[in-house]
Image 1 (tube, rainbow, N blue to C red):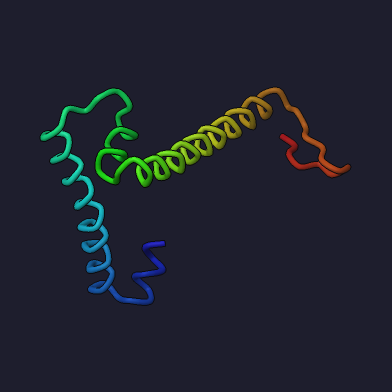
Image 2 (cartoon, one colour):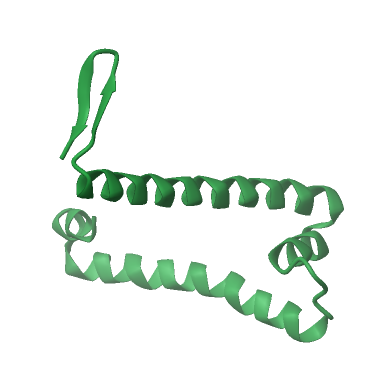
Length: 103
């Protein structure tokens, strides 16, 4: 994707996009470090920090979305591992009469 930006915006603006992205990502990281230094982080880690910073309702909502994201990534990892295992054993998946994966 960086080549798309570089081709359309040029090298100068591409570097500006990268720097702005780093600054946007750095701000929450530094504020999380500051919160961790000034408060006692109890069990829960990220969930505790979100609830502490955003309040109980907003923090709970974001924590639930974070949990769903973690589950989704775990399922993607499981799928890739399953497909690797299937390729090692030369298995085929058939859905609605069509071959989907044939290794």
